[in-house]
Length: 218
Image (cartoon, rainbow, N blue to C red; front, top):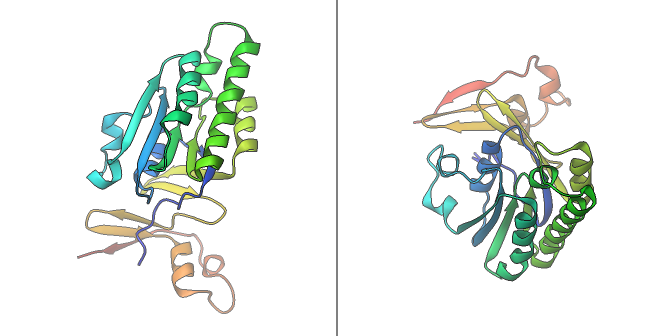
């Protein structure tokens, strides 16, 4: 039985649609890779308590290197610095709240827009050059900036908060089970994947509503 609750991350620029900062932290902790994680932070997403939440293991947090930006020019420069910092050891790059500092910047809109577009282009090029996932989010960004990121992205991870935890979804993945200490919960799609269809039809269409089931784990 698979305990996979976050999607495998493919190489390329990945736009994360997140309900809150903890969703991105959970996605990073669940990433299955060996190597360092370079994180350019904006808005305090890389908080210690969040990364250590839910009993994160040393393996999940090993190799995370965080640089924090507090204004647009600083953020742009840190993204430029990634080119020199990244190496064959780099397995993941994270740049949350990509638009927030540029939208809050003083100065001309033309200049800050040029800085934003440059940072986005550098992150996309870095993903291609290193052949690693580069996670980008913009939960508070304008519609124009969010659209620009989505257009550049090679993949999109949708996330929503449920009563049992975060549910992630991509074109190839859907969270169908939620693991807790001593027990787990499943969804109807989980049993469809496990057991197949019922009378030639997907089991999900035969059972309504799609309720969660609780199963004890010894």
